[in-house]
Length: 107
Image (cartoon, rainbow, N blue to C red; front, side, top):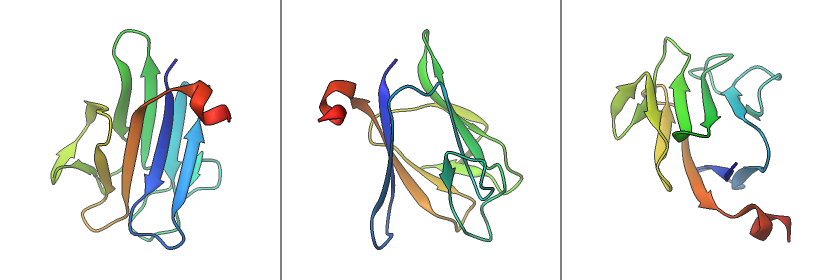
């Protein structure tokens, strides 16, 4: 499995979440998510990143407010290293770093 780092863009202080062994990473406003974001436009369970041995990381929209990549609403899309997703049309942006080695992150 590939490690993954999520970084909230334009936040002060900068927020980062590093995941080394999860197969599913949940993003949303509810406290049972891995990444909890307190924004009115972020749904309780907004999006999920899922690991597949075949296709690598993929992101799935779970919200009526939408998840966007390059301004386009997505249902599901393969994660590309460095890609930026936006939760809802005016919500927070998250950069995804998927081309990271878990050994480097353990140091």
